[in-house]
Length: 213
Image (cartoon, rainbow, N blue to C red; front, side, top):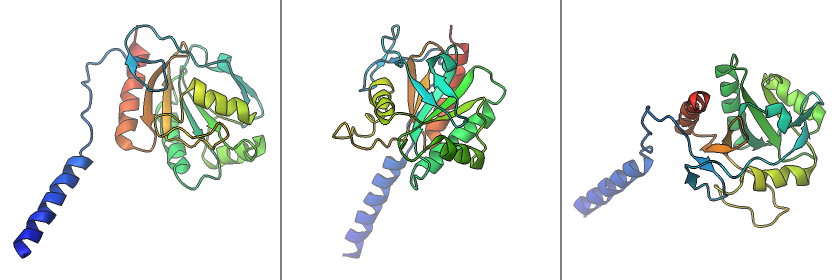
């Protein structure tokens, strides 16, 4: 009986090790990223067909932020809310690390949308920005009309698709996605913003976009 138990435990440990192994990294020689034109995030290697739709929100300084703010810029977008006790602190921490890493890069920006705009007023976002040392020159925390935010989350960034689509249009959006958008407004990558290996992949892909012709 002891021998049988030993082999069962050994088998479980082996399965556990296999499941926890990180995915293989793409080669460092990658020179181009695919386009993501649909909510199933199937990579396509031709020219993009889906651009982020026009938007207009208000940032932590009370300023209007639109597509023009990000025109000609590479940017990383995510969705959060200031009183989130779960994944949002990690998302904010990783956004802050991107802010620090690319502080001298004028053409790389960050954009965080509040999915609880009825709570996250400009004043609340300003306090959150101060607490997390957000620099508005590079990183906008935005609030605005709930329907507009949820519409662009679902139909612009496909933000709640990869981790399980919410069942109803009024359901609360909560996603780990970081979305990489190129200078023309096309989605070029999607990453889990809470996982270190995906953050490393995002970092590599930002540099690919910087050098992509």
